[in-house]
Amino acid sequence: MQIIRSVDELIGYVAMQKEHHHSIGFVPTMGALHAGHISLVERAVADNDSVIVSVFVNPTQFNNPTDLATYPRDEESDIRLLAKAGVNAVFIPTVEEIYPAGQQRDHEFELGSVSEVMEGKFRPGHFQGVAQAVSRLFELVRPDRAYFGEKDFQQIAVINEMVKSEGIDVEIIPCPIKREEDGLALSSRNQLLTEDQRRRAPEIYAALKYSVEYSKEHSVRATHDTVVERIDAIPEMKVEYFEIVDARTLLPVEEWEESPEIVGCITVYNGKVRLIDNIRYR
Ligand code: PAF
Image (cartoon, rainbow, N blue to C red; front, top):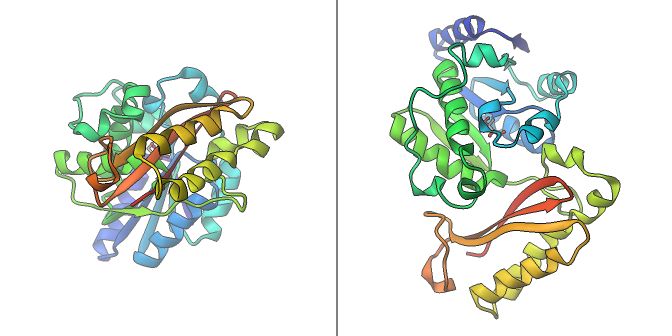
C-alpha cells in the first residue's frame, strides 16, 4: 500500500491509474478507522481495480471546536487496517495540502432541501464543510465510485445533491450500517464514551428496533414519542432530535401511508458524546 501525503504525489498516482484504465474506488474517511470503514473498503476492493482511502479530519465541517479538538486520531492503526484490507493507496494530507488558499469556501454549494433539516439545523455550516472537503477530494482522486456509510444517512443525500449541482461524474455507493454485537452503530466517536456511557449506548438501537414493531400498531407521532421517552429516561442520555422522514426527501411524515420509504433518524447526546443512528420503517 502506498502512503501518500502530498497532493502532487496523489495527482501522479491517479494519473498512472487512469493511464492503465484502472477503475478507482474511493473511501473518504476522517480516520480512527473501525470495522464500519473496513466494510466500505472491502466493497470498494471488490468493485474496483484500484482503491484509494483518504484519512483527513476536515476542520471546516466541525461547528464545535471542542468536537474537532477531541476527535479521535490513530494514524498507525489506520495504516495497518487499510494495508490488511487490500487498499492500494492511502492519502493522509495536512489541512494546508487540502486547502492551500485557506479554509474559507470560494462558493456556497447547492445542497438542496435535504441539507437544511436535521443535521443541517443542528450543525450550521456542517454540510457546506463536508461538501467542501469531499468535492476537493473528488477533484484530486477522480474516482469512478465513492463509498459512504448509511449511518450518516443524511450525508449521503447531501453528497448526491453536491455531485449533481457540481456536475461531478462519480457513482455514490451507500453501504449498510455496521453494528457491535450489542447493536451500537460503529462510530469513531464510540471511543470517547466512558465505561458507563458505553454500557448504556446500545439502548439507542434497542429503542429504534423496538419502535419498528411498535409502529405496526401505532401512529408516527406515538412511535416518535416512545423512542424519545425511552432514551431520555436513561441517565446521561438526551435525544437532540428524532425525525421520522421520507427517505427520499428527508421531510417529516405524519402518516405511515405517506411514503413507501420511511426512515427514522436520531441524534443522542450520551454525556458529551454526540451519537447518530437511523432505522428503516418502510
Ligand atoms: O463521514 C465522514 O467521515 C466525513 O464527513 C467525510 C465524508 C470523510 C468528509 O470529511
